[in-house]
Length: 215
Image 1 (cartoon, rainbow, N blue to C red):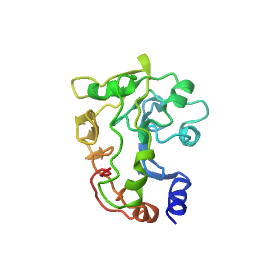
Image 2: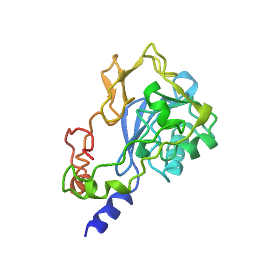
Image 3: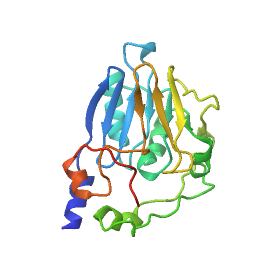
Image 4: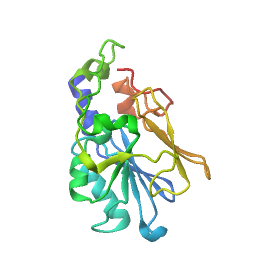
């Protein structure tokens, strides 16, 4: 039963949601990514926020090319943090795309091979996802010189009008992205709109505000 629920979650296809004229939300089973940019503005320049889970690179590329045309590349990839479900497709994407990656300076050790994240704690609750969480990857990745720190002044590269906000807790260098002009917040995992501690909730896609996964 538990394995069947997990398969239903992880095998669900990616969804799309046009949040604003310049923000396309890419909805994967357990995580989201965002394409920020419009084909009609700034020569069609765009930025990718987050890099999803492993094996999602083709879906991300397909969505980007459907919006901006074949062969398109982002100006940058911005990471809210470096957990496995936000960097899973990153190595494949930067092999294809010649673009920099940005993250908070406190997150860089996990993105340059210097440190690993702590393993997940399955004792936080009795839910299915918590119980299987020790199987989730927690090793850091090594992006070498392709990753650099976000600007100290709070600006976000290639995203005029946006600022990054340090929101530690879920990870040491977690950031959220905020645009004051229209009040849009890209929260990363500072909070979620699904209860990710409940497989049934994730499967049903019930919208509710929750903290990050407890495990």
